[in-house]
Image 1: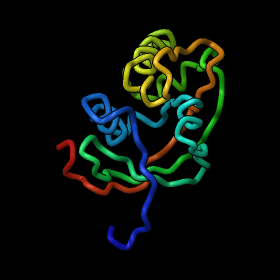
Image 2: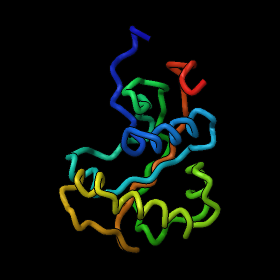
Image 3: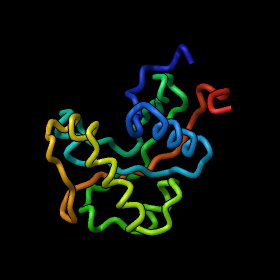
Length: 146
C-alpha cells in the first residue's frame, strides 16, 4: 500500500450517513455506478474522469477504503437517465422516478447549493449529469464497515 502512487479521491455524497451508506454499497458490490452534476465539475474546475482512471474511495472519516477504476463515463440529460443506471447505483431505488426524487433532494440541498455557489440551484430534465460506472479493483481497509 505504501508503494502505491497517490490517487485522487473518489467521493460519494458529503461526509456523513449517506456517504457511509454509499461506500458500504460499493464494498458490497451492489453500487457500480454513480451520478454527478456536470455543474459540479465546472464549479470545482475538475475534468471528467477518463475510462481506466483509478481513484481512492474515501469514507466519511477521510480514509482510503478501496481503489476503484472507471469503466464508463457518459454525459446526458437528467431526463434521459434509464432504469439500468438507476439499478446499478445500488441505492434501492426500483424506478427512475424514485431515484430522481432522491437525487433531486440531494442536489437541491443546502450543501450542494453551497458547493455550486448557487443558493437557488435546481435541476430539470435538461440538466446535464455525469453517469459514471466503476469497479472495485483493490480493497485497502478490509475492516471498515465490519
